[in-house]
Amino acid sequence: MTKATNGAKSAEVSVASLLQELEQARAQATTLGQLSAAVRATAEKAKISGLLVERQQIEVVNTEPEPTSVAEVLADVMEKVGERAARALADAFNIEFDEAAIRALYDGPDVPIRAPGVSQRLIEERRPIVNGRKREIS
Image 1 (cartoon, helix red, strand yellow):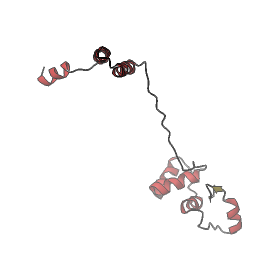
Image 2 (cartoon, rainbow, N blue to C red; image 1 turned 90 degrees about the horizontal axis):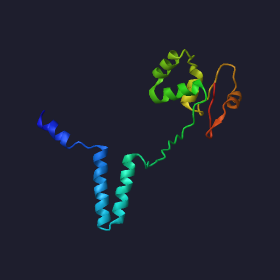
Image 3 (tube, helix red, strand yellow; image 1 turned 45 degrees about the vertical axis):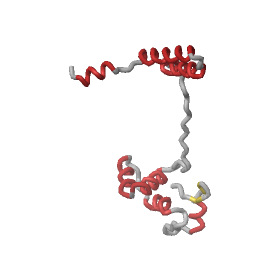
Image 4 (cartoon, rainbow, N blue to C red; image 1 turned 135 degrees about the vertical axis):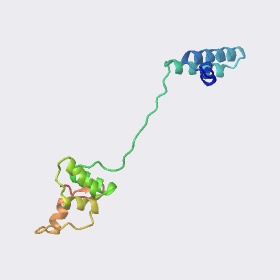
C-alpha cells in the first residue's frame, strides 16, 4: 500500500465516526453549559441518522404557454433551433410539415396569412387569442 492509500484509510469518515464526534461535541457543550451548541449537535446527529429530514420546495415557473398543436411545437422548434431541425422532427415522427401554418406561427400574428381564395377576415376569425396575441392553430 502507498502512503496516500494509508492516509486515506486513516482519515476515512463514516456515519459512525461522525455520530461519535457529534456526541462528544454535544457532551462537552452540555458540560460547559452551552445548551444551544448541544441542541445543534443533537440536531446534526438526527440529520445524519436520517431521523430529521430538511425539506425544500422547488418550483419551476414556465411563463410560456404550452403548445396545443403539432404546428405550434414545430414553430417553437423552428424558432429555437431552426427550420432544418423542425423539418427533421416532423420527418422523424412522420408528421406533415404544414409550412403555411408553421410559418404563420413562427412569423407571428401580425404577418398576414393569405392563402388563395381566403379573405383576411376569415383568417382573423380562425386565429384564436393566446396570451393576448392571436395565433393560428392548425
